[in-house]
Image (cartoon, rainbow, N blue to C red):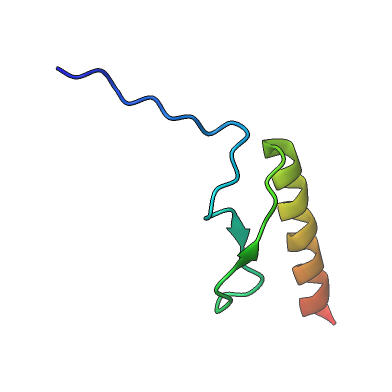
Length: 55
C-alpha cells in the first residue's frame, strides 16, 4: 500500500483563493492570511449582507 500524499499548503498563494460577493459572482481574489482572519472576514460579510437585506 502506498503512503498518503503529503501536501504543502502553508504560505502558498493559490489560484483558487477567492470569494464570491453574490450567488452569481464568478469570484474575486482573496488574500488568505490565516484561518482566523478568513472567519473574521466571512462573518463581517455575513453581517453586511444581512444589514443590507433589512433595509
